Image (tube, rainbow, N blue to C red; front, top):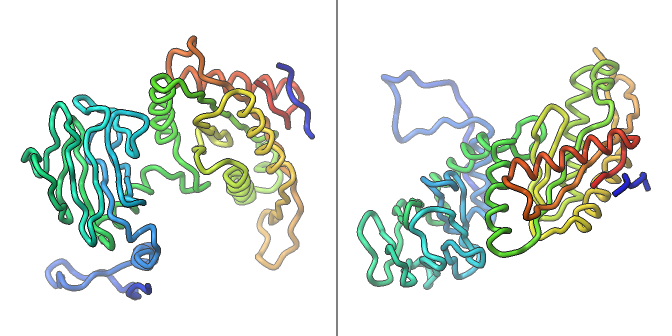
Length: 328
């Protein structure tokens, strides 16, 4: 295909100086601004929901919140939580709410569901900190308003989110892509990937400085996320290169998404400070474009990295095609 041409309130804790180890009072917790934000997040509905956090297996670190009244876990892509781990049945176990409690049921799994290493034979009410084992996967249960779960979220965020752009890291994106490839092969649903690279980005750093370059990267990432769908996963895989995993999307749909992302970036207006300028100094206007490549999973695609590589090949075709365009 030829390149497409452009067309409830939380406690407020004041940070304080470090306390010497010998004087440490275990009833006192010193927090920085980021930690205070975690406490404030307790007032948000999403943080109030009970959840499971994977402590082992390929999904380690992932949080699965009980958004509705039920949460089905298993190997099937139809489950609310699809776990790719040995010994897990297609529909293995279920969590459901009964009043203020969350109850764990085994769904007749082959290898059983274990709670704190005891096999579950009857429905059992979960308590904060309980360990649930399904085959080779271990998950920890947290009740709503759990400080441990919030602190975990912060650590998990540091490990999976690129601090410069607020999109996912390359490792996280590849983990997601590998899971989605397995799901797509098993379910027969389409899967596509986009690769995106900023055009002539080196000139931005050379002319306006690296602070300006950082602003452009953050702005591009924000514009791309806004143009993508909630089911899509965007990650930074290089200096100025990004990739997006598009579940349930064929090549034609991926091209449409890519064009929407391209247009969102091209029409975004940046205001960049001059090198060495103060906050009150005059800023310059800047327009940034990007080239994109799209590829769909096929029977000839061996691995997740091969699919990413196919999208990257199309990206360079877009570069050769004149930049600020999409190739597939």
